[in-house]
Every structure is written in C-alpha cells, then in structure tokens.
Image (cartoon, rainbow, N blue to C red; front, side, top):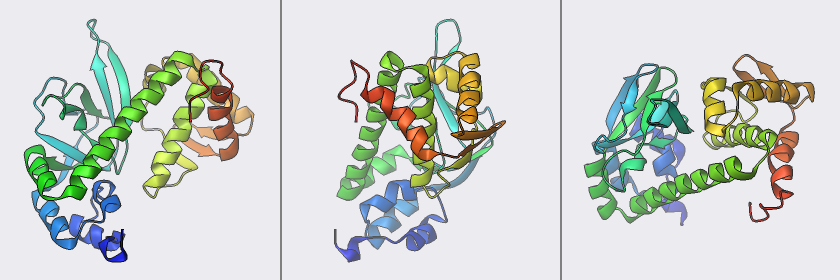
Length: 253
C-alpha cells in the first residue's frame, strides 16, 4: 500500500462524523471518492435503549451496524426460552453480519446499555462492494475474524480450565478496546456476571470467586463493574499458560 492510498484518521472521521465506521474503512486505504460513496449510504446515528433489540433471530437481513457507543450481546434462544449468549459487541465493531450467509439473522442482538449505532443498508453495501474491491476484501476479513472468534470460544469451552476461560475473556476485551483507541487496562463490564457466565459455560459463583482470586493475587482491581488490570503480563500468562500446556491444545496460537 502506498502512502497516497492511506486514509488518515482525521479525514475519515470528517467523512463519517466521528462514526465508529473507521473499524470498517480505516484498514482498507479507501480513496476519497470511494469513501464518499460509502458515506452516502450510511444512515446516521440511531439510538438503542438498554434491553431493546437491534435485530432478532430469523428476521431478514436489512442492514449491518457500526457501534458508535455502548455495547450489545448476541444470543440464541433455547427451546425452553432461556438465552445462550454467543458474543458481545463493543464500540467500533460491526454487528449484523451473521445474516449475510442466508439473508436472515441467525441470532438476536440486544443492547446491554443505552447505545448508538450507524446503520448501513446491506443491499447498498453489497453493491458498493462490487464497485470497490477493497471494501469487499475488508468485509471478508471481518467475517473471517468472526469465524475465528467463534472457533476460539468453542475451544475454550471444550477444553480449558475455568481460570483460563475468564482470563482469556478479560484479555480479549482488553485487546479489542485497545485496538479501537480505548484504555487496555481500565474498563467497565457492561455485561452482567450472569451474562459472562452464560457465555463461558460457568456458574455465576465461579465468576465471582475467580475475580476475587485475581484481585487477591494483585492481577486486577475489581470495583463492582469497573476493572483495572494491574498486571497485564500476569493476565496474559493465565490466559495462555494453561492453554499451551493442555494435552489436547498444542495448536492454539
């Protein structure tokens, strides 16, 4: 990529009015004309109140969304009506791409807090992806990342000790927030401990016990939902050491 192909952050924010769509655009190096085309199809800020749905399982795919602020959980509904959480989406991330395969959402998304999104109608985005090869490439890259995250979660649930699961979850949040310009070592958990337990296949009491254990060991400071990572290297060690020494997990990177 040459220097004149790179879009700087200030220019991109000017086009997108500080929208979190930089997560979609910035890595591609879109030329200004292509960025204008993308900018024209974006439906500006949409507010979603806490516990409201962004989309529901089975609904037709109409749009994908860039999260400007707040957070969402995506989940399936079991036959008995209980939820099975499959992921959390944070500011700067895209949500709704699960429906691209068959044209319908295969999970539901609900706001964990009052949130704000930018809506991108999928039909227009699909047309632009044909016109702009870099956009198509980035969409495929994002879909690949989602698949990888799903595989990593399945590996955690199938093989890893509870301590490793929670450490990996917290480390993942830290890295995702850091990649989008937020603090890597200090953040609020917008999701409940029950939701975290649901995602990681653990009991709520186990989550509470492990957080206390991490705090007693000086790795974290926990103040209700506010987490301060005091020893990031120790958290990384917890997330990777047990995994790398697990007899059935030598290929995890």
